[in-house]
Image (tube, rainbow, N blue to C red; front, side, top):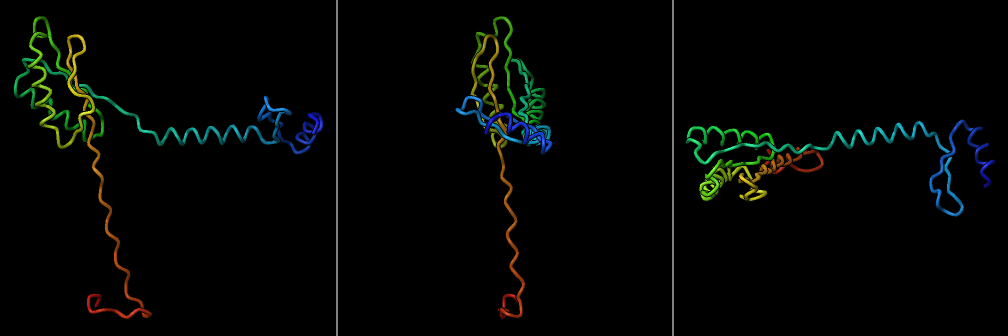
Amino acid sequence: MPPNQAIRIAEERGLDLVEVAGNANPPVCRIMDYGKYKFMEAKREHAARAKQKNIVVKEVKFRPKTDDHDFDFKVKHILRFLEEEDKVKVVVMFRGREVVHRDIGYRIIEEVIQRVGDKAIVEKGAGIDGRDMHAILAPRIIEVPKAPKKPKPATPETPATEAQI
């Protein structure tokens, strides 16, 4: 159909003529309400964004000389973050000549992993980046078992057994 005729038909119906595939031979056009189309498209995008879950990475910092009480306190924070389904980045910061004792950093990270092992999965093991050593822990997804289906009550058509009475 010639473009002039398509434009006239669209104007008669109070709609818009929208080019769908301009590179095709001949170009493909569609008669539609373009404002309504854009509105519905925005609505679909908003619904898709609402269903997305943002991944949050919380960071907990340790030092090679972190005291036992402080260590326990920080592990409690890590457990709370994991229960909130956030990822946790465990960082051991070294200052000055402390970086020579990397084994202390590995022990700290291994101790953290051991304490939160039932609630976390190690996504990235201990690794050195400059003067910091870090590991990333992700929450362990626990599937909630579905409730078993209730048995159907006896109907007059089906005789009741002794177990149902």
